[in-house]
Length: 363
Image 1 (tube, rainbow, N blue to C red):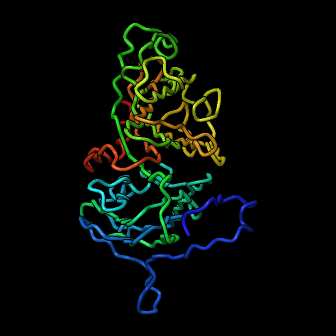
Image 2 (cartoon, rainbow, N blue to C red; image 1 turned 45 degrees about the horizontal axis):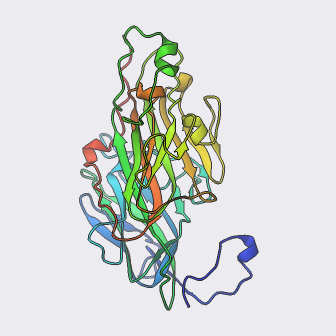
Image 3 (cartoon, rainbow, N blue to C red; image 1 turned 120 degrees about the horizontal axis):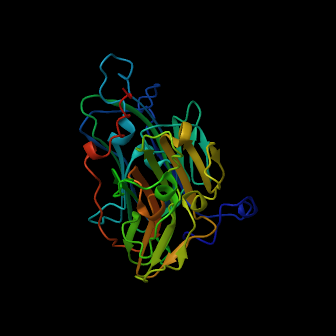
């Protein structure tokens, strides 16, 4: 009994399986209704510590800040201060290290109802988080929640649903997720350029200076990302944040890469500078920004039907504005599978993860 040739489609459901279904949750061990953890500021709690072989198939959680309605509450951005950490098979470095809200599909420490195939936020107001990414492991899975709140506790409710097998399959990659940010991106001043020149003209024939979503080494496949942008350009002129081409470099290939796109909205499978929320199984816009694309934007693209394979390395990048001219707040989560060990990565300190403060009112 191992992972087996089982998909998750309705067609495959009649195929009988031999795995053992298990769950770790926050249920009240006394039999009462206090079905949650109280996670104090500055602490790390273990949500699940599972001996394999096995596969985590579903994670559900919800979190509340008990003191959020108290005057002078200081941790209202708790979805960037809470961090999901997952380590496979006693590796030295975790394979998942991502702020909680970003991992489940939205940036800026915000929530909203949205539906995709692997990630969802559910009513009320997107406060219920779900992941259906399958996460196989050979010997051990350790799932932790790190609180970097400054003072306040949080209530945390969760399920970690998984299967156990008799043997591990050698051809399975390990799930990874990494958060990155550039605030602001390294753009150029508009100077004497017209708005058209600044927004849509210029040359980028190297890919240098692109925002980097993922830089990984090993064998695996990239399965998508969440990209968050805060528009930092204050102007009444046409202020579209996009036009940035996606460029994905596989196994150290030179420019132009095998996968070169045509614009930000195109990579996210939308078109013509969208201003609406939209959610489909593999692509969507959970936050479209305000008037003239002001404020906060959050988009997702999952390569479920079209994973991007690599043998030695992968570098997933996108321009920040055409020819990297714009200076906005970019952050992202990349999702991928690969062999272990992986190229180690860090998570930025909490002060560098907090949402960008809103712009000052104009005089």
